[in-house]
Length: 191
Image 1 (cartoon, one colour):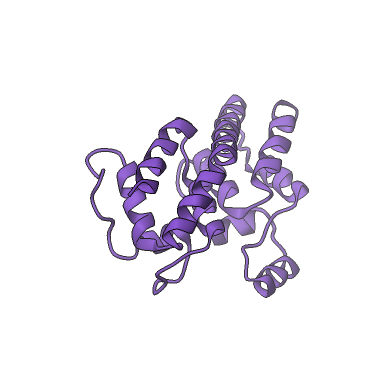
Image 2 (image 1 turned 90 degrees about the horizontal axis):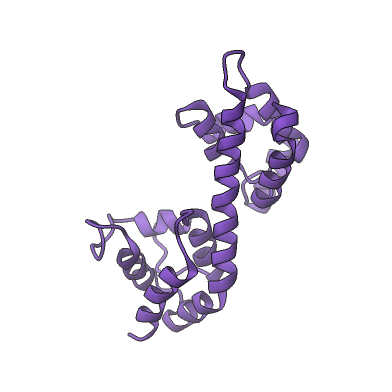
């Protein structure tokens, strides 16, 4: 598995920057069921020191490349189709590359929108609602959903531009395009 996936693991790691969330999504897909963050951190052998440093900085811990590669090697069961690891890695790499490209293109427009609305969660929620697939398109989100998506406190009414952009990057799909998303942002900029 390592020989087949070594380069893809390095690419995935570079794109994810060792973040627990994308690694967790990858491992959950490989396992065929959701894996909670605590399990992901155990699989990655995140140390107490790593947790302490992350808590002090008030961020999620990150894995080293070695921790990620060792966890990938350990994840392989005897009856696993090794090619599946490569296929799933490539799919996640593709999604992250698409997200990176779209965000690079749209960051100025997203920053302009965020500045115009002064980070208002209500305005961001309206933007997200207009980007939702049918039948949710244009409908309000459940209470607290926008705060959860943006990872801001539940009583927050505003977010930073980084919260906004990072949320987009985490949630973009491999089929999203800068043109498709940019059009909706343009409509909201014109309001």
